[in-house]
Length: 93
Image (cartoon, rainbow, N blue to C red):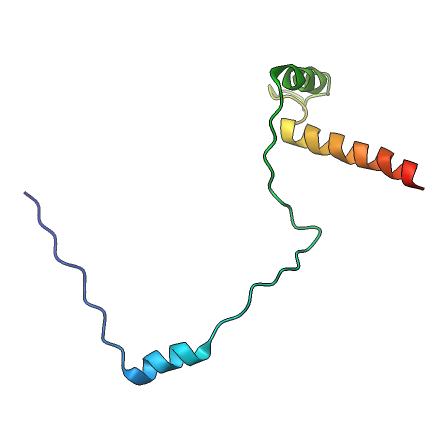
Protein backbone atom coordinates (compact mmCIF):
# COMPACT_ATOMS: atom_id res chain seq x y z
CA UNK A 1 0.00 0.00 0.00
CA UNK A 2 1.43 3.36 -1.05
CA UNK A 3 1.64 6.08 1.51
CA UNK A 4 2.15 9.78 1.09
CA UNK A 5 3.37 12.46 3.37
CA UNK A 6 0.80 14.77 4.94
CA UNK A 7 0.52 18.22 3.38
CA UNK A 8 2.92 20.83 4.67
CA UNK A 9 1.56 22.91 7.50
CA UNK A 10 0.78 26.51 6.77
CA UNK A 11 2.62 29.03 8.87
CA UNK A 12 0.59 30.51 11.67
CA UNK A 13 -0.39 34.08 10.93
CA UNK A 14 0.10 36.72 13.56
CA UNK A 15 -2.81 38.79 14.83
CA UNK A 16 -1.40 41.81 12.98
CA UNK A 17 -1.41 39.92 9.65
CA UNK A 18 -4.98 38.74 10.22
CA UNK A 19 -6.11 42.28 11.08
CA UNK A 20 -4.38 43.62 7.95
CA UNK A 21 -6.36 41.24 5.74
CA UNK A 22 -9.64 42.08 7.50
CA UNK A 23 -9.05 45.84 7.35
CA UNK A 24 -8.02 45.75 3.71
CA UNK A 25 -11.65 45.10 2.82
CA UNK A 26 -12.92 44.32 -0.61
CA UNK A 27 -14.65 45.89 -3.55
CA UNK A 28 -18.28 45.80 -4.57
CA UNK A 29 -19.50 44.01 -7.64
CA UNK A 30 -20.18 46.44 -10.46
CA UNK A 31 -23.57 46.01 -12.07
CA UNK A 32 -22.78 47.85 -15.29
CA UNK A 33 -21.77 45.65 -18.16
CA UNK A 34 -20.31 46.69 -21.46
CA UNK A 35 -22.77 46.28 -24.35
CA UNK A 36 -19.96 44.72 -26.40
CA UNK A 37 -19.25 42.00 -23.83
CA UNK A 38 -20.91 38.79 -25.07
CA UNK A 39 -23.61 37.14 -22.98
CA UNK A 40 -24.12 33.40 -23.17
CA UNK A 41 -27.57 32.01 -23.87
CA UNK A 42 -28.96 28.57 -24.56
CA UNK A 43 -31.58 28.00 -27.22
CA UNK A 44 -33.65 24.98 -28.12
CA UNK A 45 -34.52 24.43 -31.77
CA UNK A 46 -36.53 21.68 -33.38
CA UNK A 47 -34.84 19.20 -35.68
CA UNK A 48 -36.76 20.72 -38.58
CA UNK A 49 -35.34 24.19 -37.93
CA UNK A 50 -31.82 22.81 -37.50
CA UNK A 51 -32.24 20.89 -40.77
CA UNK A 52 -33.25 24.09 -42.55
CA UNK A 53 -30.22 25.87 -41.11
CA UNK A 54 -27.99 23.00 -42.29
CA UNK A 55 -29.45 23.26 -45.81
CA UNK A 56 -28.80 27.00 -45.85
CA UNK A 57 -25.25 26.48 -44.56
CA UNK A 58 -24.58 23.89 -47.27
CA UNK A 59 -25.35 26.50 -49.94
CA UNK A 60 -22.58 28.80 -48.69
CA UNK A 61 -19.24 28.62 -50.49
CA UNK A 62 -16.52 26.64 -48.75
CA UNK A 63 -12.85 27.46 -48.46
CA UNK A 64 -10.92 25.73 -51.25
CA UNK A 65 -10.08 22.18 -50.23
CA UNK A 66 -11.98 22.37 -46.94
CA UNK A 67 -14.51 19.66 -46.06
CA UNK A 68 -16.22 22.01 -43.60
CA UNK A 69 -19.27 24.04 -44.45
CA UNK A 70 -18.71 27.73 -45.15
CA UNK A 71 -20.29 28.99 -41.91
CA UNK A 72 -20.84 27.51 -38.46
CA UNK A 73 -24.32 27.06 -36.98
CA UNK A 74 -23.45 29.62 -34.30
CA UNK A 75 -22.34 32.21 -36.84
CA UNK A 76 -25.38 31.51 -39.02
CA UNK A 77 -27.74 32.08 -36.07
CA UNK A 78 -25.92 35.29 -35.03
CA UNK A 79 -26.09 36.55 -38.62
CA UNK A 80 -29.82 35.76 -38.76
CA UNK A 81 -30.46 37.59 -35.48
CA UNK A 82 -28.52 40.64 -36.67
CA UNK A 83 -30.46 40.64 -39.97
CA UNK A 84 -33.74 40.47 -38.05
CA UNK A 85 -32.72 43.30 -35.73
CA UNK A 86 -31.72 45.40 -38.72
CA UNK A 87 -35.07 44.85 -40.45
CA UNK A 88 -36.98 45.53 -37.21
CA UNK A 89 -35.12 48.82 -36.69
CA UNK A 90 -36.36 50.02 -40.10
CA UNK A 91 -39.95 49.74 -38.84
CA UNK A 92 -39.18 51.88 -35.80
CA UNK A 93 -38.07 54.90 -37.83
